[in-house]
Image 1 (spheres, rainbow, N blue to C red):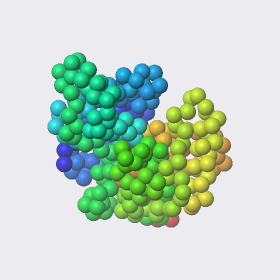
Image 2 (tube, one colour):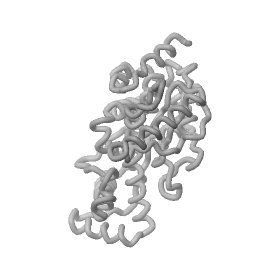
Image 3 (cartoon, rainbow, N blue to C red):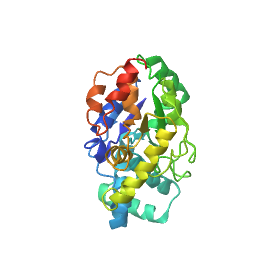
Length: 288
């Protein structure tokens, strides 16, 4: 399988460990990634609040480039994924504004987006039934005894008619993937609650309250750690546990796949975390 890879701004900066672990996992499973040439920021964080043209034109330019590359595009950032999927959906359904901007870009770039490719999140690809069998076969260090909750956040599965590859209210695909790695995945009711990442700078107090709620409920469910599929959620949860008595480590699901696959670089990825995950994984190494 070959895919065009759209890292977005986060995976080339604050979420470098998500970028590295995603690349390792895909190479291990035979998924070939080719980074999109000359990609630009998709504008997910703020374009919609400042410029309506750019909010649609930025992701559409990336889709035009990806379509010219000839493969489906993988976007690991939930915000990028949501924005690219929403733009693709608008073109497919011939939304008036999207069609106007598509025509503008055709005049500027000499090409328009024809919606002949799919926008996909790595979790969607790596949690298919066939891939789960491949993943189980690659595990050399089972995550046996590691108690986790899967956190999807609010962008990965909503709105369901646009972006969802899983149940929008009760997604299970990350749960299934973590189970295939040998982990004990706990049930909880906060999988898709918002962590407040978009308000991290403007309403830090509100964000700290939301994060504390998620961590407290994860602990109440019996988890030792939370697993994320979004760089904005991960960094928000990892850095805003100011109201939590016992901070909890926040993993990317690809990092745990790397640990289970025996990746030599997994220690380097985890050194970037604010909440040290080493004690949790040390217990795993001892089989406790």
